[in-house]
Amino acid sequence: MPKKNGKQAIGRSRGGLTTKIHCLAVNEREAHSIGLSGGEAHDSPEGINLLLSTDEPIITTNLVMDKAYSSSKMRIIAEIMNYNPVVPPKSNSIEQWEYDKFLYKERNRIERLFGWLKTKFRKIFTRYDKLDVVFLSFIYFGLILHLIKISVNTP
Image 1: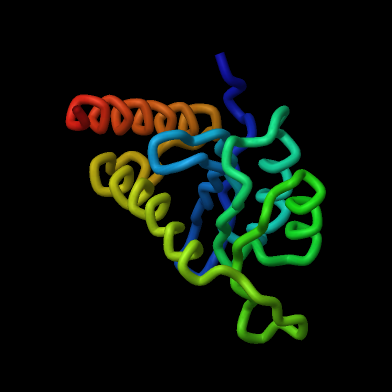
Image 2 (image 1 turned 135 degrees about the horizontal axis):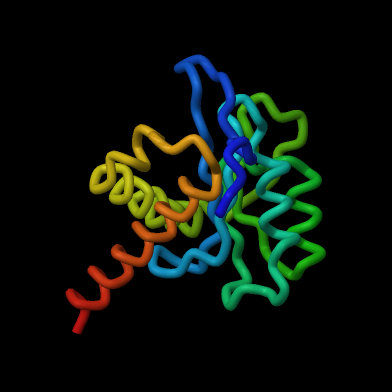
């Protein structure tokens, strides 16, 4: 049983109290690890935690990331772990680098997964749960249902 006043990962942003969901996934079917952070927190530190929490490298060698994960520290850690970071530089970044634009377009598959979760499960979209443990367990439940839905529809 989780503690009544456990970890919450709720933070203030422009829209009020929010929670960010971070996901390290092999593809739109397989989420490797998921983390939560408050709405005001930067994405890169949580992304680094997800990368470092993996015991073995994921099957693919390309690591397609959102621009919010484009910090130099995140890219260096990804390269040390034998990943090829595919992330565009921010427009205001001093250091500009090349990336595979065609491969970066594949990131939308994960975005669609989270879009599906938020449209099917109001509980994820609005975050009714106070504790991280409860909220995260419902995200996992939604991912399991999504995987079953895809498996049934795929021959």
